[in-house]
Image 1 (spheres, protein in one colour):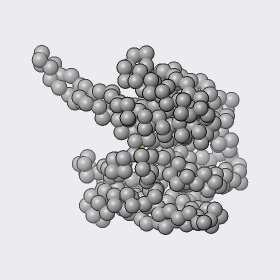
Image 2: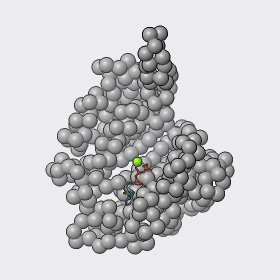
Image 3: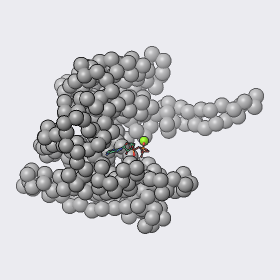
Image 4: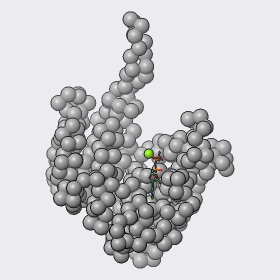
Length: 350
Ligand code: ATP
Ligand code: MG
């Protein structure tokens, strides 16, 4: 039987439409090879939506996304909209759609491909074989906890306050995503916290430990965030899946990304409790190279692979896309951002 999926495409701005077009072509081929059926519908977001409808996130876009099985987003923003007030800017559309879909788990892989090992900022011996997935909690923690704000105390001195808070249900749902992600990978889960100092981390650690018995095939360990930052740079190969809160995840996922050294190669997935998830490259809209056929489409193509693996539960189709990416690199094709000697330069159309 053919599995059918409806996918909302949000090409957005800058290089977004270019890399999205390539990715849709890839998905059409995969559909044929894997006996899948995709129906694509496009919707407006970001600057493109501001130009057409005067708002970065039209209601129609939210509706289309909610009714689909998965949302594939490219990138938003650009110089053109830089002078708008903050609530009217393209980026507001991205925050809005994440909130509207209740996406609380952000998955960011940092994988060193042997073909691109020279692009890494670290020594070959250190990064060879690195394959890490950072699972970051996205809607709680210190970015959202109450109280927050700048207050004036009784003595008249100003105090800035943010609160790192997690409820048991918030911890349990991100832990579930993390255990299931580890199951799909090498079965090793490292939870990162600061339980030697923070009470919220102690609760986090207790919940992870309590859930571990439901996942006997996953080996759970814990690490303090300061040590995790050091270990990521010193010996990144020790990690498989990392789960952590919003703030620590923000920092560690960027640090892990830099191990790979190539922004045009990094995909991401954001998941909620129910479908649809949202899948997008880590990089921005790259307005400096938009329309010049220089963009690397592989982060977007790999985001479509994550959509198949983590959003639609089609791991074989995801494998095929990832293998195709490796093959293109094996053949020596490169965009400018991952160029090295002896390779052939191509753009999106190439
Ligand atoms: P945002 O704020 O949306 O994250 P940004 O300003 O941080 O955007 P990007 O838009 O990601 O950054 O661009 C950073 C640099 O990386 C730019 O020079 C851009 O051209 C380059 N870049 C980003 N994505 C790609 C890509 N897919 N292919 C080639 N170069 C890219
Ligand atoms: Mg940025």
